[in-house]
Image (cartoon, rainbow, N blue to C red):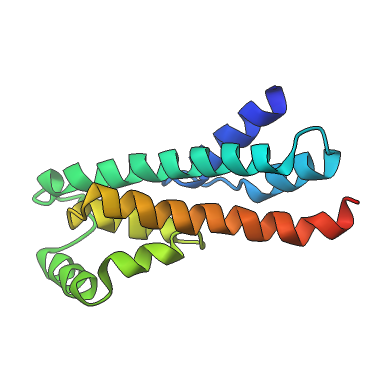
Length: 142
């Protein structure tokens, strides 16, 4: 069970603003063959989506800090972000699996994207990434 807990933790952290990777843990567990691939997919996807939910929630509350000197986004940058989001919006979450995807999930919170839409797109993107990864690893584990 330690391996699955480690996979969940790695996947969760990888979807937050903390620097972490889950692909190596996933690949190692798949190569060991101790758990069915569907279990690895479920654990990794759940951890990654829940981590993204934490980042989304941070986005919901981040604007209360915009008048602080240390806040990284000026009002002009926030307006550019709103304009970008108006153009690409929710569809950008389909890239939330990629490096830098945490910014997209944070921005979804800042822009108050409907939580159900957020969950659906994030689940599709992050779960899809692990499915592709499992498929790439499978020929080497037989």
